[in-house]
Image (cartoon, rainbow, N blue to C red; front, side, top):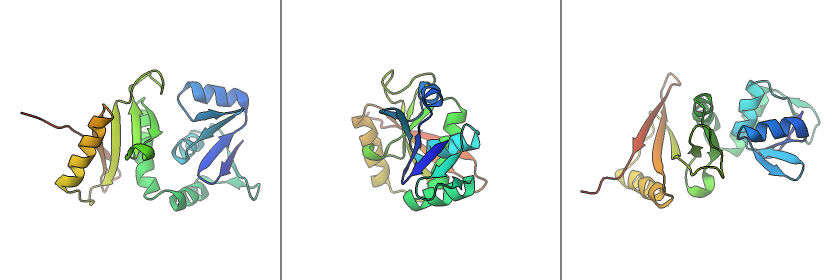
Length: 170
């Protein structure tokens, strides 16, 4: 059983927390594993645990969890589709908010601390528009972090398409 606390999912089961941390989920906080909302939903869908609301003590359904997360994170479900797709492909995915991106992605088989971020991911839908100035800013920011920019575009059929954007200097 995990607990939903605002924008985090807290897991207190030490054995399960250790297993999940070994697979690149969450951050150790004392005896607990603190996970972001994307990790929480992914693990609910994989039936690794159930979630209980800290305030009410009631079990939280996947649908209620998505509603809660959508209030905390803009475009949560679109971003979740990208998170889930990358996890299914074997990548460790962490939030990239403090770096100016939606996600950071580590090479397959590597966790934070074992390898440097492979990509910084910007999530968009096919109807979103980005100016060259915005794209240039993202490419430069990714370059400053010594990584590459990956634009993840979710189309109308909820398929995720990836575009790596790099800077070319002649």
